[in-house]
Image 1 (tube, helix red, strand yellow):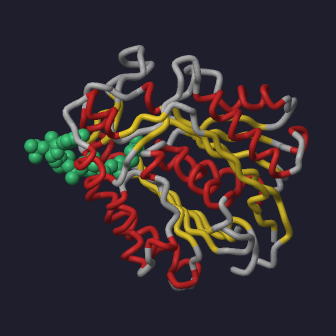
Image 2 (cartoon, rainbow, N blue to C red; image 1 turned 90 degrees about the horizontal axis):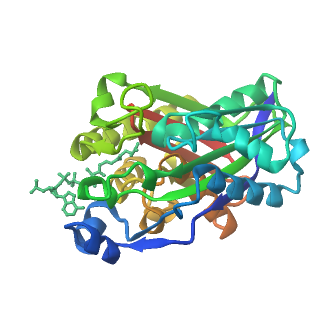
Length: 323
Ligand code: ACO
């Protein structure tokens, strides 16, 4: 059978770093509160003239560079983002143009923090159906542009950045020993859309609005849904948690991540953590974490990775991948 193998990863973080100490000067908060409740110590924030596509393009170039491929080897680009440069066209076509690709599919996916796993799933399906051989999948966000910088309940949580992977078709045996995407799991519950949303939009207010979150309620749902979905991944693939080499979670809150790891019986030494220095970069957080651990040598070829995320919608998603 055809498998979608992760041929390469890349990522990009804007230069500007905002520490918790700086946050203390912006809103009524403290380093102690932010670290205790979330695990976040600092976050990167894009420059005013830097858009989501700028971040995405940098991450894409780095992934291409490590793949040894050229842009014409790619059949498509899918960008997961909540913060596109413009209402249309998609960020994906800007990436396509900037890389010098001439043909192939290009579109954006909107599933907030679960967006990268949704996009990865779509790319995997295109590849398995034989509709594409190589797809660039990116998660890119300029969350700083939809944050109310006077709202301490949200502004301390988010950061900007982009991460990319190149998925490539490869022959597999249809077993768990195959490299590539082994299973994907996507969910949404629109009944919970009022827990996390922006108070604006193109067809309502005519502007993007700012993030509003009922943090405690989202937290409770995240703990439950994450525990359920990781169990589903184990059951579907008939594996035990001890077979997973790395948990690569969405980096929203260290307490949610720790809860999921505990549920799996995994120590934090098997969890890729970037929440302390990246904050919550929404759709970018998983590919950013992935690239960080690939580049520092923790994630090795052949290892089994469990990716999981929850975000606005609510949406939640997971993927089992052999790197
Ligand atoms: N600094 C200091 N105090 C604060 C801050 C802050 N930055 N923010 C809130 N507080 C106060 C609140 O006002 C409240 O005070 P009160 O008790 O006097 O009313 C107190 O701290 C506790 O607030 P809670 O919201 O109950 O704090 P909680 O422990 O739930 O932590 C947090 C808040 C970090 C937001 C947590 O609920 C969380 O992480 N939720 C889930 C986030 C998530 O996973 N989101 C999904 C992805 S994001 C996306 O899709 C875009």
